[in-house]
Image 1 (cartoon, chains in turn blue, red):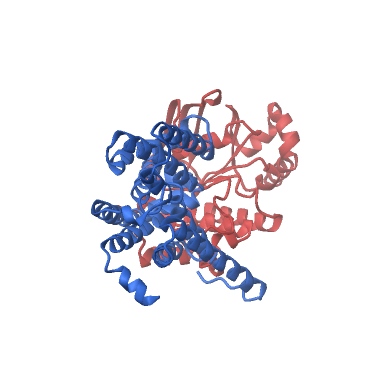
Image 2 (cartoon, one colour):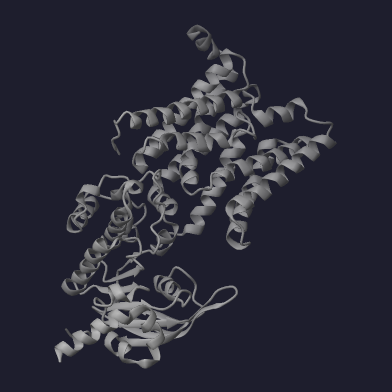
Length: 280
Length: 251
């Protein structure tokens, strides 16, 4: 099995898949750390549906899906924020509206275009075979930008998710940081749909954070461990997907779900066994 | 004690929301070392006034002036994000109180952490320093929030119904702590409350709101004014009785 796995690295598409996977894992988990605590993690799910619609449009028009999707999904992210702020609408309702509209539009376009072809299907559930060099450069670039922004604005982002009103009173431009988070989410979703798929990409935002939150650590450790776990999930998911010829996105999500379950049950059993302690 | 330095000046303040006016044409001054109780029924504009003072909302007209670059500490009405799973320690939460004075890129130093330890020690909650905020009781969380408000050494401390989550014993200790801050450091305290029975003996200045300013002055004068009898009867009977008794004993 290890021999088979080593053999994978002799293929260019597998190396690209691992590089893109690790980059997206880092981006999604870092953004997810803040979105989950803001109770806004479903924005990733909503935006991925919009990405599905824009990919369908791009394929219909014959243009590059990533470049076409990026600005539209970013606009959708800002629209969700504005609807939440101005239109007397809760965040989940705004996301629901945008998501269903995106899915409906994508399905209608796919139908007009002769149904779900191989290209559109690969964007729905992810395919490592379709990853190209441009995706590698984009995903590495995006993850470097996200890591830098999180390092630089770590304290502001922590204040934003813990107590937004307090952050605002203390001079933090909360609206700007909300827009920044929304756009970074849109960028991560757009870059990630090649490997993971529009239907599954939001799991990379949610699973690592909720898994590590079960361990009840400090905020700093939670963010760091969540990023590490995200990379581990993607590496194992991609490896299993290669070894057993399974769809990459679905395998990563299933493996992430399995890890969450192990951590959740492990923590519950430890607590039941009377070994409850608080290590932050 | 002479209290003559004006700390905060509010002139003709009006705040309107989309469909109603929360406070209208409110004018008052708060002096250094005042212990102010902002009182009024639900919906009378108390929290709006405090948020306007903190700059957390846009005012429709009027002026709010803080003298001499005062540092302001704030303890909110609701303890935020205190669910059990929220991954933050009491220390991480308290450090947030120093955010405003940090320059870009905002980083906390060993000195800042030492400040947190000192405040926790003073508040008697040193044992909570590394505990997760979500695992603490309501009273413990309130003390951590107080530490967050006090860490920047504020000249003015604004508290929005701070004792609502506390049991009566902790409530008393908490108010005693505020009083000692007020007396020893001359910290100006502005406290929103609907519970004059509990805080009445601590405050010396009352701002009574009912969307407009109904009263601004000493607590004992408030109690004497028959115009406020309905409010006193409902919320401040014992507090006013206690205040009048104190006054008589002084005389």
